[in-house]
Length: 269
Image: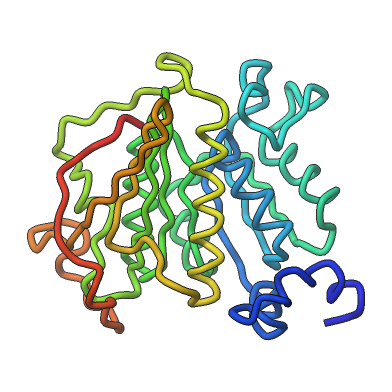
């Protein structure tokens, strides 16, 4: 690590839980971010500022005026530009040392599996159940940690599905595809602008903890936020033994003993 990097990341390095070795690990890490919208904005900003070496950002949409109320990685001058490219340009201004790969596409199953396989952590900042389930399935296949978040109206939620752990639930355990959930996009339901910043920042924090094997992550827990009262609820999750996605997958590590139990509660996405 050179002198400029020591200065740039000095406030991380001062933390004994991170130190120089942890910061170097971040610079060697790769994270796949699905979505460059309200949640993806703070996620990408904090991961880039923190020095994660490689960020792959996937989003097939373009910047629209209505996005600017909450998608803080984009600017008025970005309107009409691909969100992934707009994000790449903003991140380059913040930290030019980070290798940002911008993909303007809704990646299919084959490409998605390739991207998941090469990343150290996957962050789901998408806005629809089809994408979330596809991402989850790929993470289960390659035993990769998935950091999931959602926000709509004044309600938010965040969790980690650390699929490296033998008894970790997956996203499908919480939201099976045969459930009655329906996508409720912000264009229809609306969303409180700071809410996506809160949830996205938590996703960024959980991602850094996963990469650094630091503290206790939200694996096996679902955090629910009511933005009108700022009340949090924490609900324990457990692996569904009948899950059609993860129940027959053998993983290599045991989950921490304090991350167990179940949940059927849902938050609108």
